[in-house]
Image (cartoon, rainbow, N blue to C red):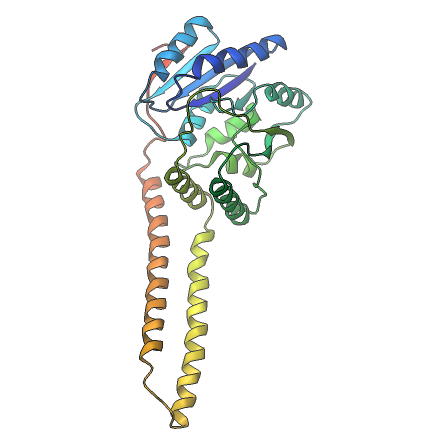
Length: 308
């Protein structure tokens, strides 16, 4: 059986469409399935529509968070509750083409344990959004040492991979990077991002920036090395200006350098504040991990074996 995990946040218009579309494709291929909708604390009627979808199709199960915990938490909740021999994570808005699930499943039958969905294009996006996305993936690829330029959350995982991910104790998780990190036998499927048929994107620029910062710091210590680089830059500048000042002093040509002093002070202060900010962000992440709070809180569940 394949478990299809659909993280959902304010997707009341897409729940039944997604359920019907994915179920129809899998039924036509005689693939046993379950659909796991994870309502990430939606403010609309997403949960009510998941309950309705369950009444229409008993293969639909639902998980409802007590509040919004974020897409990463929703995906991991789906992986934890999924019962299939393999799992596919797909966006509820169907911008990930659901017909590719069959192609992924056939590769899994051939023995592949991770089937990555790789974007051939990003669909209709603003120039700024594309630039921001490319910048983020360049940073995370450099920080992790893995090429994630076209990576997405759309992928199939074998049960052993799912169990490995579920066993990781960390609170701050980055699904698409961790699925690279765990290894296993991989294959790829290429797809084009589809346009939404209903609703609107939940990703604002502010949300994307927060998402990038959270995931880079949760998966890599590379930003901390910026502090070391800044330290060496400051040392080099100090040596250069120190030599200049010493030479001028020995030659009796020393003059007041008020502007230079101000520039150096501003640069040094900026470097110190940036360094403290980076350290502070990591301290905050450590604090979150030490508290040991759960990644998410489930308030309701519905589906075969889950009703409560």
